[in-house]
Length: 160
Image 1 (cartoon, helix red, strand yellow):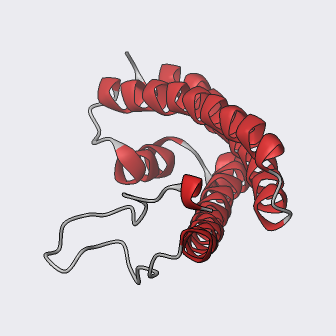
Image 2 (cartoon, rainbow, N blue to C red):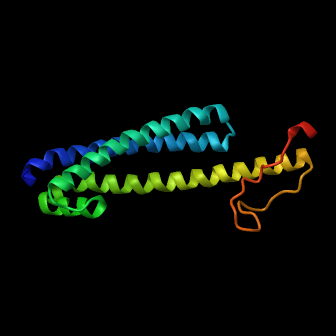
């Protein structure tokens, strides 16, 4: 297929991804509020919505990868930038492409921040369990031998 014929579908995948990332940003902001506000019921629903949003985004990414493959370009950001620079004038797509890149960074940063909040909440829960069960608190995710440990094995609230 000619690269000119691929311009429309490529642009559609970019615009679809922008819409998906905008929705995901809102989901992540809601997730952040639920994590900070200690709202487990809301968090469960938000996480389901987050997974659905990510699955929809994946379809757009796969479509864009197919277009890049048809154009004989590598996948990912490198191929997309090559396709963009070879087939669009900056005025044709610069705003959409910048929006896509900026939203991707923002969503990534929000996701990392939410992960830190979730780990802090997990640590607090572990400390509370330690107090309730009378067990010493673990300091990390790994045991002395380097094996992964969730720090909760052997805890029983029945001793309270």
